[in-house]
Length: 214
Image (cartoon, rainbow, N blue to C red):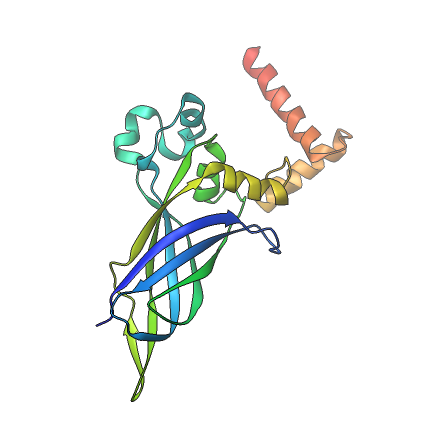
């Protein structure tokens, strides 16, 4: 049997992608010397929020995801960020391959909300690997599955994610709205002669604040 080990060399912001993307450089080692023809590799990327500390501002930003600090012993649990895949070319012994990690700034996605709340420090990731290995031998090809226990941990600096998001959405963010709500918001903007969506939302927030204080 083949003997595989996976590690993450680095994760960096992809500068030339058409959409927001991080790239993970993976190192794959096969310890028996078996010739690997190719691997159809799949990866589940999980965030493990319990593996880091949070300052007061970050705790406030995570309130909507995990509740107040007193509940974190129950709510601070690993969650899936994304699933992705790549094809690994043939090798013997060891190789490195890039794995694309497509990202979104949609605040309906838990991963984006979590990352937006972080000021600095690491994002604790675990990559769980699966897929099909194609072996090349003297008598043709064989097939194996990537062992179920193949995984790798990596602490992604928050600054890398922020650099990537800032390059695609400088000083902006995205909120998806129901079509009826968007229609009402558009009507409100038109009736009040507001010139931008920022001004529209700021006007509504100011009105709400005045109602609360009165």
